[in-house]
Picture 1 (cartoon, rainbow, N blue to C red):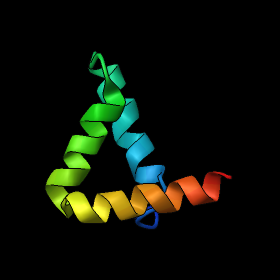
Picture 2 (cartoon, one colour):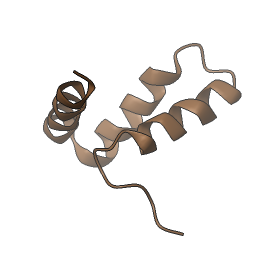
Picture 3 (cartoon, rainbow, N blue to C red):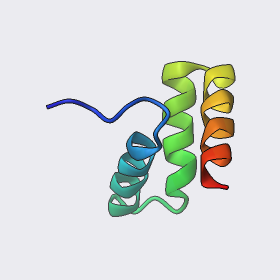
Picture 4 (cartoon, rainbow, N blue to C red):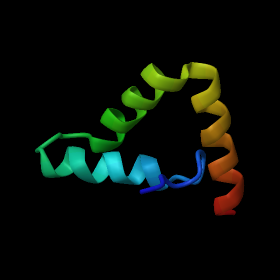
Amino acid sequence: MTKAKLGSGSRFKAIEKKAAASGASNPAAVAAAAGIKKYGKEKMEKMAEAGKKRKK
């Protein structure tokens, strides 16, 4: 099973969905914390910026 491309947002949404199912009050924060732990603050900021550009 292959994972979605890094930076596509699919991985973030999957973690967010699992956190919500677990009863997290802020699932987006849980997903962001996991991403920052794995990729670091700078890379997460770059991916978020790229996602915002795609959303427009």
